[in-house]
Image (cartoon, rainbow, N blue to C red):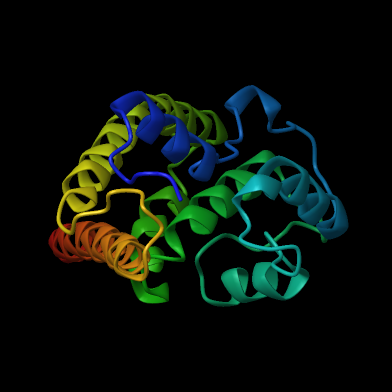
Length: 197
């Protein structure tokens, strides 16, 4: 069994491998109307590395219908979805695991305002994408720091002993708890900011 106190480069490499996320580049979003099946296929192809296992779906027809029903996005026009709809679906995809439906509704309201043009929505998405791309490296550094801290909490000398293996497992749990606390803290901040909208 290898030692837990890896070099910073090893830790960052491990995190990069586990954090591999697919993003949808603004230029890749088609500016032509699509039917629902085309939308689900597009999202599946572009976000396939984000699912946890093979059984998990990126997006289903039921999800899309529920998002529309819950006023998280505008309804399709003659069963066709525009580039705007895809942008809404991308935002919802990333927010749904950390925000409630009612909070997502609040976030989407200004984007569904009749004064919001398609060009403005696309510009907002482009700016979001640019910020996310830059933020990825901050996230990587933050996660690496948490890993460094928790790897040193319980000693692991690489002997493969029962105690060594148990300490390595407990260090991994501490790492997960730290990451969970980070996510929880940011989720609470998101909720407070949404309440101020």
